[in-house]
Length: 287
Image (cartoon, rainbow, N blue to C red; front, side):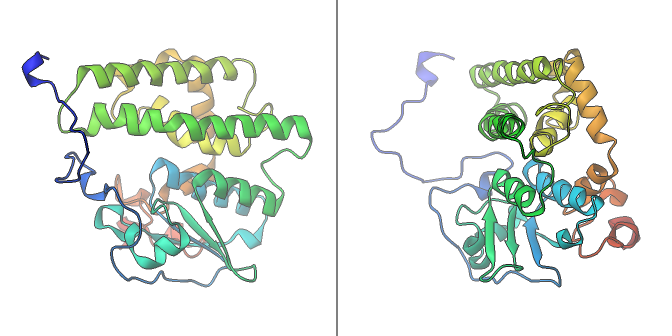
């Protein structure tokens, strides 16, 4: 880029126009609601408000895993939040998550009801509530939480960094793509080395660390995220490939990916989920 075309930041930044790109309409420099809109409440104690992004899929996979383990108290209603339409800025949603990001959960089995926001917090809350998918002994619990928090800290570089500049930014900036491609590949190498030592991230057992990480890095390895598999040479991370395929084959994961999904094949889209039978009767190919 020539010197004449370089951007020179002003002394004080002002929000004067949308930033451009696919998700420009959801970005703004202030918090709080933009309109009054109450959230619906269904018949189950657990009410999920979400969309099947990688972060949203964490919560639905977790709930489907708990149900498969026999925890009937994990039955849930999943309501679709259309972030492109600004649903996350409605007053009801902001009351559940002041950060206006999906997923958000309300647990009506407590008095008063408990709000849970941020995907990692939701996974930890449900794991502790039902006593599953998080080791109880200190060493195993700590290693699982190490990887859970690794994902929470690392994924913004993959999504907001690499994914944004490679797939969604209105202009291709070589420096930004190179910077975040390098970081994405470093993170894949971190995972590959770990998964060369153990079957799952926390050790021998499948845990919330895997549930948190797979929707981002597992789906990246399977070629489902950003259409960047060839660019990042994801097939070379053999241990990540093994782990990603193993988790992808779980029926609970297949169901969790369908909930609040508004893209892809119609038979894989379940816009709302209120009962287990919805997977057979209410997908978009049957409507």
